[in-house]
Amino acid sequence: QVQLVESGGDLVQPGGSLRLSCAASGTIFSINVMGWYRQAPGKQRELVATITRGGTTNYAASVKGRFTISRDTAKNTVSLQMNSVKPEDTAVYYCNADVRTWSGPYRDYWGQGTQVTVSS
Image (cartoon, rainbow, N blue to C red; front, side, top):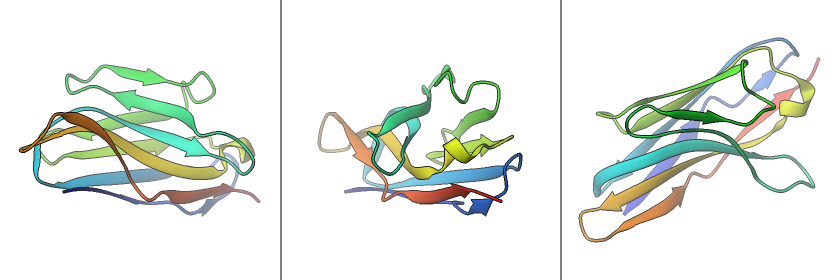
């Protein structure tokens, strides 16, 4: 019904930049909140940033001022610009969206994840 596909994960040096993208497709009627989460080895999945349909953003304290989330509502895409990355940003990054399909209520969907590794 709904698929989220992430791209942009890579190996990047500390202090560098990376841009993640996520595209939602399928029988989408409307998308409310979109966001990025991450999970490092041995740790729980944690929120990185979210953005509402109206453009209101929310960031984890650890990334505020370094990461910027944006979305294209017409194209059902969300991006995460990551600047001044640190080794502790290393994780699998997951796209998340609160989607209403043509046949049902809003529910959460997840992408398959994209690996970000910060290392020299």
